[in-house]
Image 1 (cartoon, helix red, strand yellow):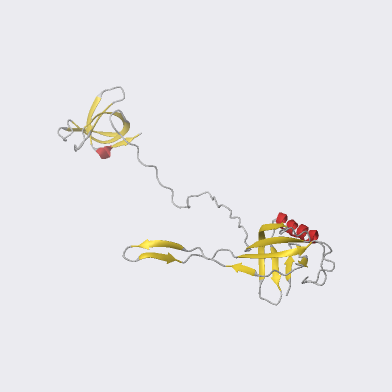
Image 2 (cartoon, helix red, strand yellow):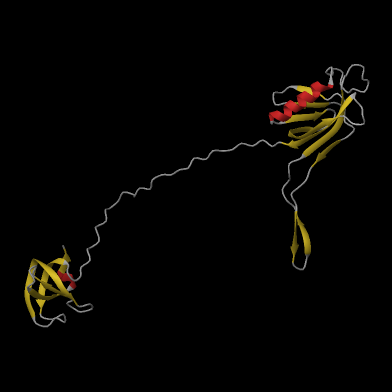
Amino acid sequence: MKFNLTDSKNKTFALPVNPAEINVESTTDDKTVTVVKLGEISLIGPEKVKTIEITSTIPVKTAGVHYLSTSKPYKNGQTYIDKILKMYKAKKPIRLVVTTTKISFKGTISDFKYGMTGGNADEYTFTLKLTEYKTHKAKKVKSSKKKKTAKKGKSRSAPPKKVGRGSKVVVNGQLHRSSAGSGPGATERNATRKITLVATGAKYPYHVATLSGGARGWVSKSAVKAV
């Protein structure tokens, strides 16, 4: 069995000493909620990223060390430390493969501790933790801000102008003495007039006069058109 580390440039080396144990941790993001008349229940959440942790030793000098797990070790332990630190600082995913097992773990180095213990100056002790790396890629979405254009079709006629007291209008219709229609008189033909009074709701609601102010009479709503 060998513990091989491969960096982002596909360069591989084996750890000089196999760890006594290896732990792969798989967890889910579960949550607990309280339900009326049922109590506390667990809601199974999505799978979290896996982690893997190994603890082992690296001889300071590999020559003559009988417990090595590789036949072609580097001459000194500092080389292994430097390579792992380089992987850590690169902040790129690496791969740990444990031969004779199905463990092939792609991840980033999230924790690396090393030093010496027990006053032993002949070997380093270290703990290496990898966090699973899942391939992902950001997708750039272009915003489509198209100008809205009106569909071609029949052109709409302009709405009629509003008329009221003081409006200048063209009159085509019979004049009356009152807004109720009494005393029918002369008939106007394309005469430009001015509305001087408005009787809302009456049969002949508009009283018109000449532009100079001379009274003409009351006309129907259909008889006037705004200029």
